[in-house]
Length: 159
View (cartoon, rainbow, N blue to C red):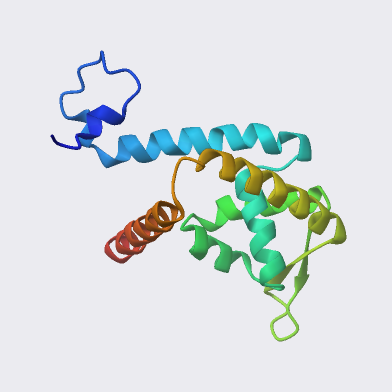
């Protein structure tokens, strides 16, 4: 008996003609299930999952520049700037010039940003625990390992 990916789809009535073997379909579906629904959970806090990730990184890396965020997320700097601008307007981040290069600004999280981040981390922790409850600890670790490997190899080829 084979472990056909088609067996994992909820609507077994559909003919997939190989679509079930397209990795992008599975990643896209997982993204919809995780991020799309998480957005609704975070909505009362007034932040998106990407904004939470930015707050998280800024808290862990005080003074980080937007270019560092852009490289981490592998997205264009203007896109990062839009996220940061909204976080600054909400009072969650401040942007101050670096001491060594006044032209370059670094990001710092505000006390309000730290409070929102703490709440968001609790929401994310509970949400993800519920979503991966059907996986063993070993399976979760393997999932993270494989996703990290895919991202690392994609970035090497796309650079």
